[in-house]
Every structure is written in C-alpha cells, then in structure tokens.
Length: 262
Image (cartoon, rainbow, N blue to C red; front, side):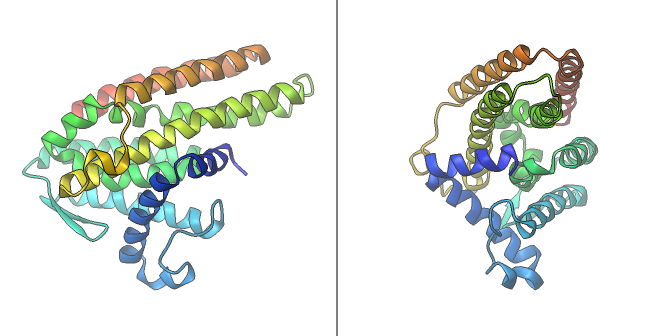
C-alpha cells in the first residue's frame, strides 16, 4: 500500500465528511464521462488502492486536461455548467503548463492520482480571473506546483529502504512522518477542489465543509515537511538531498510559470 493510500485512509478516519463529499463529486464525473463502465463500481469510485479506482482517477485527470485544451467559454464539469468568461488567451497558456507539469507528475507518482484527479477537474475554472485570484491567495497554486516535490519523498524512502545500512526503524519513522504530511496535503487539496467547484455554484457555504484558515493549513504542512526533512537528514543520503533540492527549484519555477498563466 502506497503512503498516499495510507494518508487517504487516515484522512477518511479523521474527516469522513470531507472525503465523502470529494468522492461524491468525483463519482458524478465518472458517471458522466465513463458511462459504459459505471456498472463495475455502481457509478462510484472503486475500492481504495484497487486497479479500477486508479484507472478511474487517471480518467478524470485526463478528462480535466482535455476540457482545458478545448478552450471554451463554458465547461460542463460533473454535470454542472460553468461560464468562465472570455479568457481564451489565459486558457491557452494554462493548457501548455498543465499538459507538461501534470502529465509528468502523474507519471512520476501515479499513487498521488487521488489528488491530481480533483486538481485537474477544477483547473478549467482557473481561467476565470476571480477564481484564479482566489487560487493564488489561498495557496492552491503554490501547493499544486509542490506536488511533484512532495511525491518524491515516497520514491526516495522506497529506495533508501533497500539500503542495508539504513535501519528498519529509521525507515518506519520517516514513512510515518510522510503519511502525516500527505494527509494534510490531501485535506488541503480536497477542501480547495470542493471550494472552487461548489463556490462557483454558490451552493456551498463556509460551514458545510468546515474550512480551516488557508494560511493555517499551509503552516501545518510546512511544519510536517520540516519533520520529514529532519527524519530524512538522520538517514543522511547525499544523493537524496540533491534530488530534493532539484525538485524544490523546479517547483518554484513551475509556480512562476503557473502564476504567469492566470
């Protein structure tokens, strides 16, 4: 079981309502875009970490990117129509960024597809100026461009676990801290996706999803990230630190590119 799956299961335990609302949204998208196969899972997401579920999430991600590529003034997402305005030029820039960044991210870490599916679903809404402003102010763009960096933690620890000089208890401690980090990242993205989707429909008030302060959520994530770094530092693998630094620089560059698209 991947660390992302463990984190998602942990989030389901700590905030079942949030996860169920998110899965309900994704299930509506599945029913519409893959009607021929909905009977296999009753029109819902498949079992956690199962092959059908992974395939469904990848389909939603692909469909979200395809919508963006269509460059329309309005989109039908999970059964509801959204008018985004006249930002065709912005959509063209966003398409180029998304196809490159998200395609690479999902290839590098398919385990994180539960987050990428929702991100891709609402990405076309960011061609609306107000939604784009909210995405920047609330940290959604920042967190999205950091996803490849965060996902690299799991790949890195998996490699380190094969090193005989690294103790099993050290690996377990790092894994536990990464799961805690991933749980907070997923909570942030799930809330963001629901906020952008239902907020545009003007049906979802603050109380329904129990939003935390966005800055406070990011503070928690940065704190957990620091813990992961500390635990990785105890393993002290130079090549791993170099790879993280490279991804950190790449994430910062991608954030600049994404903000230039909005």
